[in-house]
Length: 111
Length: 121
Image (cartoon, rainbow over all chains, first blue to last red; front, side, top):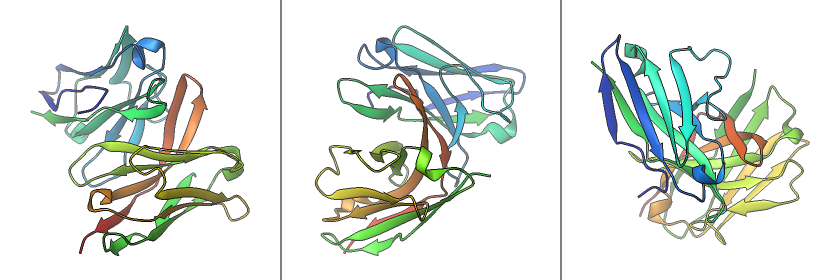
């Protein structure tokens, strides 16, 4: 069981807004450590999607956005496309464990 | 263009050893901390190890501490992971990853394609 908790799966249709949560604790997200998000398309390596809570690297579509509050963070996808079907992972740092952490991952299905 | 290319994966028996390499190009390798992250079949991502930009310090996940050793050769732009006393649960794709950021805002901005390590008798 991951220290950063994500729902195993989410789904949504194009035109809808899909949200993926990442719940941590006072030793990671709640301690002020930023949350980052990665997209892993089937059979490929993970790719940085959002860094420092809400920043998109060059080339990432603006339908992807990130936010955080307290001990949780969220990734939102506004109008998911078929090519967005992938696994999504949140990542942060835990000061008690002194390690970088990933959430368990969430599989997005586009209806 | 940043490129990270892993090599050295394969099948090894429990208790055996294997060394992974990661050839880096397209950036100033000696300026970045580097990491290994692994993913067991059908499972999530797990951070394994990191090394300072000049190789002066290293850290490991508890699950590999004392068995794995990370190193780098900045003259060859290459990262290594020496894996000893391998166990069945070390079976995974191992990714070479570049780290970026600072303190409370540290993330992994470039990933290699991965090297599959299978530990089985």
